Length: 173
Image 1: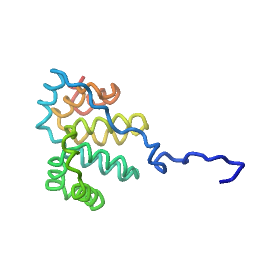
Image 2: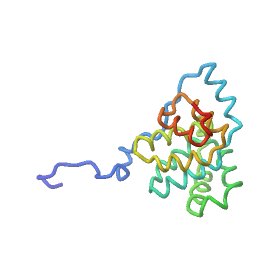
Image 3: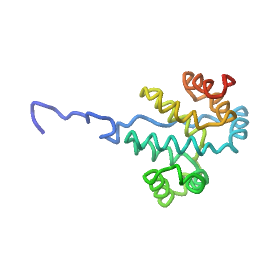
C-alpha cells in the first residue's frame, strides 16, 4: 500500500462484492392483503420476462445480480424456464441457470419469492441505476394480467408502475 494513497474502495461497485447494491426487497410482514395478492400471482410464471431480465443482467455484466435473482426464484420456476425457453435464453444464460439449479441449496426454496416479486426487486434497482431501456424490455415480455399485478405490488417503485401502463394498454395504475 502506498503511503500517498490510503486504501481506496474499488472504482466500480461490481469489483467489490461487499459494496454491491441491494437487488432485493426485504420480505414484508404478512397481511391478509399481501396473502391475497400472493394467491393471485402464484399462477403467473412470467417466464419470458425472467428470461429477458437474465439476458439483460448478463449483457450488462451483472452476473452477481443475476445469481441473486435466480436465488430469489423458486426451483420450479427455474426448471420451467430451462424447459420452456432454452431456445431464446442463449447459451450463456442457459448454462448459468442450469449451473445455479445444480448447486442450489435446499433452504433457498423456503425463502423463494413469487417470480413477479423477484422481478420487481430488480426493476427497482434498475430504475435507481437509470436503466429504463432494460426495464422497458422486460415489461414488454409480460402479459396484461402480469403487468396489472406487477403495478399493484406495494414494493414496486411508482415510476416503474406507471411504465407498466405503456404496455398494458393504459389499464395499469
